[in-house]
Image 1 (cartoon, one colour):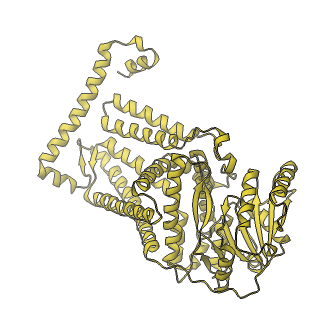
Image 2 (tube, rainbow, N blue to C red):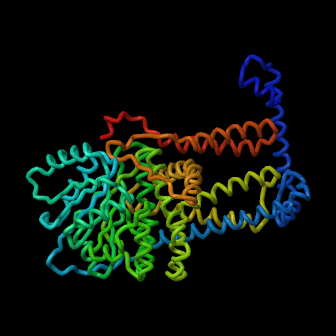
Image 3 (tube, one colour):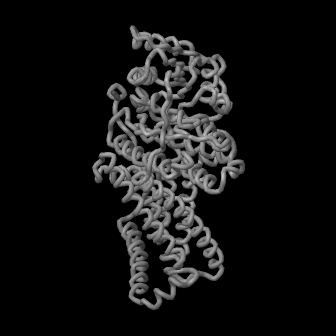
Length: 537
């Protein structure tokens, strides 16, 4: 039958009509066999109860004794992974509750006179229009321009810096804003190296580090000063996302980003009112220059914001999350989302490698909180492992696992439903239609599932050694694309395996593999935006 199928793939004329009929008859027989078994199993309640309470669960066939020890080990590993997922779900549910019922951090009152603030914007390979936009945004912030100093530190070529200076000159013509574009001849140390270099030249008493795709709220500087006056070492504003290119995908991603930001950032901060937040918002942060120098600036690493946050916490410092919101650019395509997520995830792995032991001195609860934050992306390993274990169980013929495992699965499903209800409610609080939020969760789930496979590859690489910085296309480059070979390869492998299992008369496993292949395909195809670049604005 496999030979017949291969002939059909190569040359449709080389196989007879009756051979094709036989293939489908074999498939039909296999499906009918499984259906008949399940019917007998369900109709015989005594058998059902006895089997589900056994150590191997309900199976479609007699499991060989030699397989039973391996199957029990699989159940133990599966249970451990499910328990970990339950912990993550409980953490998310708790944070979502914190957003709806918690209280914001208290701020103080900065005593005049107002200080000079140095705004540092590190750039490399950024579209010039993005830099111009971030400067325009600063002009709308409620703070005296004569007390602002903007330092744009670039690791680009001289021609780029010259073009940028010309663009800024036209934009700021007649505006009394002290700004400089500084080019590093020897760019080292990633973003941290650039910021430290700019900070050594800054004349302000306060430093604000700003990403090029972030727009500050009007009251940002005055509120930041109030938080610093309250005793926080570093402060930042949570963000809301907006896409540069408005499409079905980017709008759905925007809803997902904003809802999750309220849970994972704002909610988690609100349930830690006494101790303060434990992470920095990387796209904007403000601190006294003296504090910046005390901590030695940013590390020469990709995870500069995470590294600084942990060093502040280890020094018993305080991190404040402000009660105003910045706006940042949400990826407009699957490729951009992929690049951003992989960069964030590998940064967490870097921090785990460096601080997994040292952070124990923070105390048990703080340590657990930090670890749950840093391993949110490595959960992709668990998702992939659960899929492999499920496939193993299906190959043996397991329809329903033993009762303890089944209970864990049911509890995780119930908590997952509770989490979805909370996310829908938070979306409603943000002004989104419930149906739109639900669609966004579906789009996000499909996209993240497709992203699981490259994420596992890059997380494994970063666990061994540092990987190069992955740039996220922004502004006028928002629709740039790149290769997604890993997703496409895994999808094809699953599809081929599904066909092979189908020909081996294992229809349930075949459906499982083909379904996963379709989910991967849908996950990355849904984020492919076919819009000409000149229409991006």
